[in-house]
Amino acid sequence: MTSSSLKLVKWTFLFLVLNHNFQNIEGCFDSIISFGDSLADTGNKLHISLNKIPPSHFSLPPYGETFFHHPTGRFSNGRLVIDFIAESFGLPLVPAYLEGKDERNYNVKFRQGVNFAVGGATALDSAYLLDKGVTSSNNVSLGTQLDWFKDMMSSFCKFLSGINRVRRKHTVSSRGFADWMFNSLSYKIYALR
Image (cartoon, rainbow, N blue to C red; front, side, top):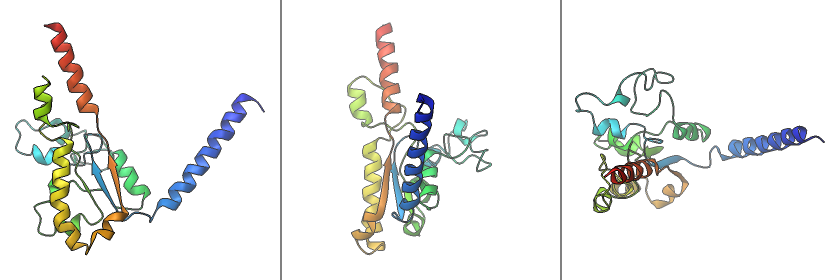
């Protein structure tokens, strides 16, 4: 067998295995809980910056025009990876936490998932970064997202009648770009001095 034929067989086998696994995974989870940065943010950063003048760039076209036909707070002109994950599990798109947390029935809204990701979020708190000489334009860190999660879970678990329902939730997290970017920029500025 030639090298290219062997590669084709390997890729075909890999595709079939992955396709089979994704077909079996549908129905295994009843919701998604997401943490992260702009790679997973479905609208939290937009909610934080609603009163900002001029409006944030991601709240204007072309953001959102490919799939939603209007800006949604996603840092994309269409769907994000988290949207495709939800779709592959047979679940609805994951709503942003800050869009629904003040609603009376937010437990119902978040029953099939909630997204705590915020564009520009860092893994480390801004106080720690500042102590190291790194400035961040965003005060939302992974710690803040976990605090939101803990606040929500206290009433969510009562609503779902026990923690057993939480076990079928799929957790997704993306992190790191903002940390890398702020550190790289800070180093370059420091090196220029």
